[in-house]
Length: 95
Length: 489
Image 1 (spheres, one colour):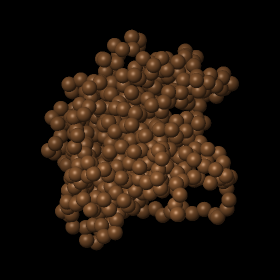
Image 2: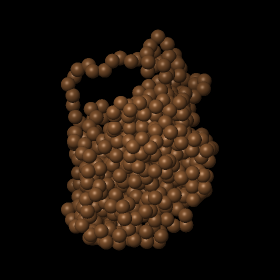
Image 3: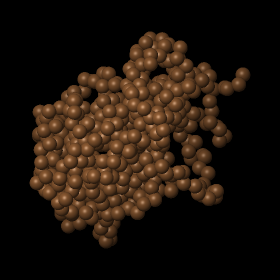
Image 4: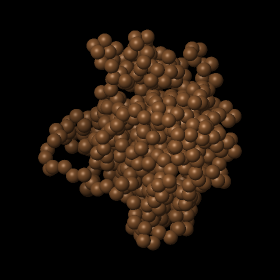
């Protein structure tokens, strides 16, 4: 399946990636090639086959709803590029 | 003793022939000599390694005799290590000093090992040649014009070049086994769920597994004893008792039934790799095994299904890298959207961005059924093929890679790179355990053979690998280039 420029831009936006004008053609070709590889899957009939999400079909283990961890906000927030008063700082969202 | 196995070093430490400080210093000196050329390590922890070595020697003097006490180790830079840079081979995390240890890291600390440093890798574990790292290519110690394989290229090169006694890697589509094959070392991917993924930066959550890269199957067993086991912090880790993986290494192979998939000996396999694997199978017959052809009918679909599932899961896992809470942030973002887009576009390399795009597409509205769900159905067919084969055989053996290590820069087309993992990928899709061991050398480059086992039958694979290593010495071969550089034995 070949993709066009509009679709590439749409996917890039969903993934919050920026593709330069100069890169668009190459990115489109590369992704189209990969999709051609993937399309080989369509050669086999999988009607009635159960999808496999986990090799042993195990389910999510649950635990009791009890607090077992300590709040380490200040320690972890030291890693942030910008923070203040316990908040992460980012460019203004609302005008 | 830097070219000795973990088992040999452990015995020497126990006998008092050598101290942990001495062997640690020997590795640090060798890293200082060779890492400039090989680029196997991103971070070397000289001071903390010597402190840990001293602590191990003291613990030994006080009666501690655990098997891995004082043994120098390297971790792939995908494992979070507390207060140590953890980059995942990416600009996105070039400044990320982890505030905690991954469970795997914690377990090796508890076992008394010495951390030498963090090894180089393909960015976010996406690659088969260690050419996508932000920190530069890793060179194959057997021929520095060749790739070491990927994504655990740094760990494989480090073990092959005697820069550490043992190393950890991760394997999502072959990333332990293929570099082990290219570098002439032993690499082991456990069953999905055997080893905790907590603190291991996620690429594809339903496929990723951590495992050992070592000079021998016995060493891999020693590492698995430490790494394996239920971790409540990883909800996909299996609640199954950890056996002693060294216990059955010496079981005789008489009566072993080996399955050889016809699909793994077809077009595309190089003549020298095929010969080496067939010679190894003949060796197994001498040891009492029987060989039987098996049919992994849907094998040809594994790469396609993988390149939907893995990028799809990666696109979700990598959405957390947004410049807000840690890692790289672009300069002077004008608004939030600009910050996300430029941080991610500047922080991620080309291959990572490509895979995120493919994954995003596969999961997007209107395509989910055609791609992700279809791939999950193919996964079921692939698993069923293995289940059928394993009713008649105990292990499945074939080549790890279609050829030996290729030249750096020789594969510019992503799809041709993806086909490198043609024999390894199905194993991750099914969640089975598998190892690669050296079985030959061609044109100065190692050849690896893959041994696949049933779920949780790691002990059988290790036994089969160990017996081969007791009767042949491919795993002891060293690159002459590296032996010359060392000047010592």
